[in-house]
Image 1 (cartoon, rainbow, N blue to C red):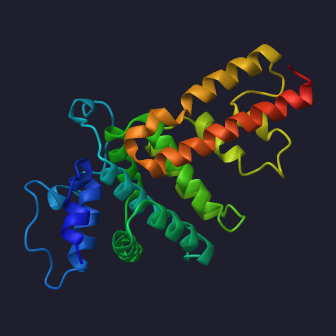
Image 2 (image 1 turned 135 degrees about the vertical axis):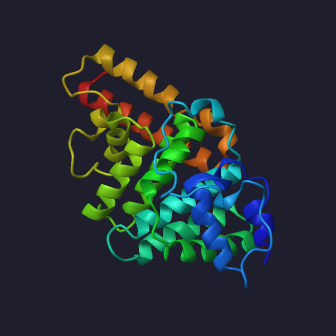
Length: 261
């Protein structure tokens, strides 16, 4: 297996801090006798216990542009936390993850990533510290799409279990995302249950004027434009495209309700 190449190659911020500690344990467990060598200052340079608080204040100057590998590893770690949130791993959730891996990795890499996920599921991960580390190193638009994928995963079985909801809300807050943005993403899964889903998706109230609706649409379309996450990889860009289309769907729905031009 090419774990050294897949995990160590081209990675940046995830090699340190809480994520590095988690990945170090996982990768070590996948080798007979553990890893022979690690990058200087890598993997075990921090842990969720030793470095529990990652905040933007005082850390912003350390931010470097994350690689696509950083984003993918970060998503994989948070996926494992959500999958365990309701006490057991569901087949529908595993199918969503497998589809994600097949779309975004070569066959060998997808198999290795799945094996890595299985090991992650056995770990006790401080997802708040992990999300805080991501917050410091990843831009807001990409963080939104990480949350988007986690919501897809949680809704894979058509439900949003209380355990999943709690974990994802905690992750969203630790990622530094606004409650309005969390609710906007969540609205797209409640079209059949919530008559005001389209307004929530645009982050406005049903009492908004037509002009306020138009302004909200332009703001949201700009926020979720796929170009904002182009450097994060095709997987993240695809999620942004889905939300971009959903924003358009919500706007067209409201226009139809109101007879707007």
